Image (cartoon, rainbow, N blue to C red):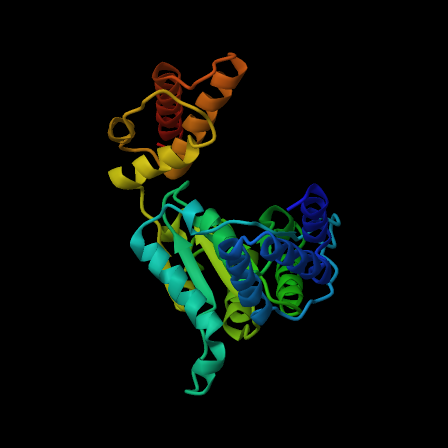
Length: 329
């Protein structure tokens, strides 16, 4: 593969020009065949063939909906290139996501039996346990752009405007195939009998549940929350599946260290020991400790990441977690 082909591939990806991508990809395959790189050529063919058979209709991007009050965007549309190797979660979480993917890919088969795929999932669990990352991986594997709802713009100070904003979001996702993430979902899913909330929020919860129940489009709707105890009981029944994200066990903590430290050379490190000393760390906590250690190593002109630098970053993260827990209490 020459440099011009690499540049063309990146240009095709950035501009979302599928025709250009397939043209360049086929040229690369032919070049590999001429070089007698049979295994590589065959593998590339299989990848392109599988992708081609699953190509979706290319939708013209509808206008991003905005809040009438201040004109803020109600959502962001993002694309990711991630795979299963990027996701370190429990087997039950992976099974739930893989089942959803299988149902979506075999939708026509299900329809012959009068069945439809699951499209609405509720993610819940402690912060930093992989809920948002799972949405990104799901988006990547399905090839659907990820729509991230921006609740800071959705919640309006004007009576009735919040429900209008939610309606705009559902109208937008009806026009394409997306993975839609309602992060911090408890903002619009709170218990309606909460005496601290005013009537407007209760109406918003009612309206959101109706929109969710009535939705029958081709997008995947994910709602995630760190506070499942404040969700209205009726909200849970609106989802096809409920997925719990737990704190990583020792095995997963070790895998998280290996994943987040693979970007840098390091001295021999006992990953099992690191996993043991970070018993109460979430995946996000481990990632933050690793990134801080890597940055310190690079900025300190170290040729290799040493254990002391990593241990100091872990200790610093422990203090941050302790302070955070004190504030929450």
